[in-house]
Image (cartoon, rainbow, N blue to C red; front, side, top):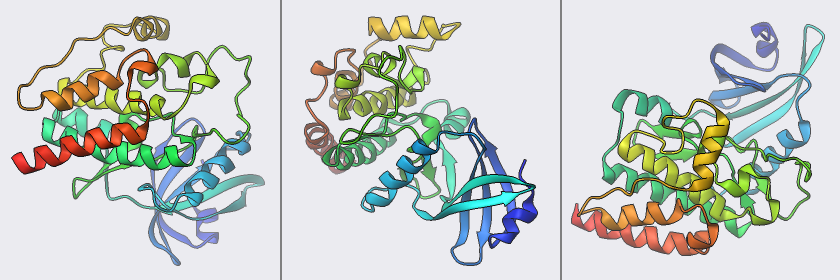
Length: 280
């Protein structure tokens, strides 16, 4: 683990480790320049192309609601060089943590989540960007009840050369939330409808408390087989039926049977959101 004295050398104090993932360690800290921040320390020997691609995507889209990047650079600690990224600190918890406490969430809040995510996916679509990793762990629920999508680590800019080997049998993905075209590394089939699928699968889990493709599986291969079959139980609620139909449609195994685009999905979810807001 990195020496906290090294973090003090770059103007950070009161550093508290929040989590450690495969390629990074995340701290909460106080920056003399930016106030309370989240700090990502990238472990050595990572794919720096992906790291800088993520930074480029976030900084090029100031209109998306995510954790903003204030600064990034390198630091040397105990003879080892690290990339560090100083980001906006989001006061809240990720959706996985929240669901572990509540089990499920009211359909009204599910609608709020989808409204936020689909509007963001629409903005990304306009710049040919696909997030590719929408899952509860990457969605922050703020203390004000807002939903914010974070971690663009495997985001794909469709206008730029892919960083994934075309011959690879599997694409970058969190398998239990990815559609089959992403799992199979079918690059030509990946677009905003890939993100629509993942967002609606998260919404489905919020409603009933389970991921239908992971439920009952013992390994990843079993999960992939269920995703490939594309069979899941349709949910019912007379008042929220149009919202559920939106979820079912965009969880379809075949992307041609999902909404044609994020723009089209946005019109649909906006109409549902307005209708339900008036009803509430």
